[in-house]
Length: 387
Image 1 (tube, rainbow, N blue to C red):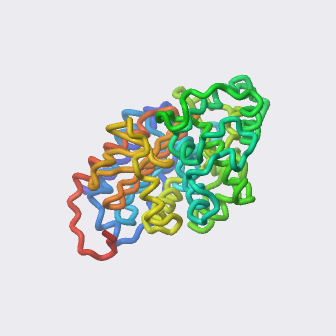
Image 2 (cartoon, helix red, strand yellow):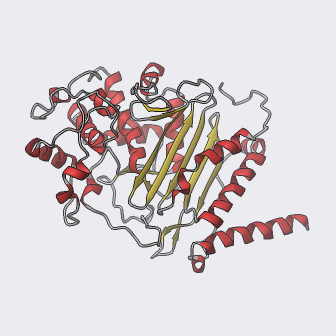
Image 3 (cartoon, rainbow, N blue to C red):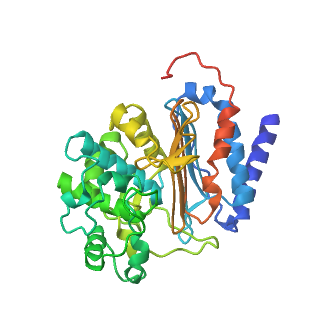
């Protein structure tokens, strides 16, 4: 009887969460439970319940709409999807629904560049102009681009007249060509200070193509996605964004946000994936499958001396970067209706992925997940752990 009462209250809470978004008439089914072993399920049962309760409240009171995965020591402890992938066609989010990663794409782009570095095909101190001789900023290096210390202006601003043209599909080649033609004034001298800029990663995607002799989309597919089993990942250039498996972006009033010219520039954004695929990517890094420990130590090092509390590495933001216990490498993203968060705590192999396709800042509240993890009292017997 007590179990029946609990199930009724739980379903009532979930239903309230949906009605709060003004979309209760869709009556979406709850996604399937994550595919985890019975041992893992029992081991993290209390933690999973705590996280589920937290996200149900976020759905009910904050209108959260998205998908989540949380893992620890290589085990998935929580995986759920809440809400709507396609309002017009009444499609719910599932664990395999793909999201535009926005600036979380920079993590993948940086990894691709560092893979070329490990193969000896590039050096981080190489000038970008070595590979693109017409580039009008000869002192900017690959490392400057990776660490956002190039001083370049954001193409979204100096190409505003092109970006706002919804009839055009702006490509990375177009950004480079127009930079060479217009030669916009740089904001800062190279390596003077940290200045976050999408242009850096649009250019890095071109570098990957030039050096690997593959399209950026194909390089990611061949070198990262397929080898790691990331079956639901790709770029906007390698897929049909109107497929049912891809979530639609919505604003705060649930109005769909149409594509624009800049959507088709890749590297700085426009990579699509799922929480589970990003978990696979994170685990591949933890297990040094795609980048060596020495290379990751360079990527996770603070490269901006003027930033004292938080910092930026090579494609990663850093939090508590001077604390070996709390150190976190992460990236958040925002583009149109998508809000994305990809956080990794190195000491205990924690991975947190929160992806949302609706204009809502709750996707960034990963600190609540860390609080739930801190309250976890799971006792380990050493089996399956990799400390």
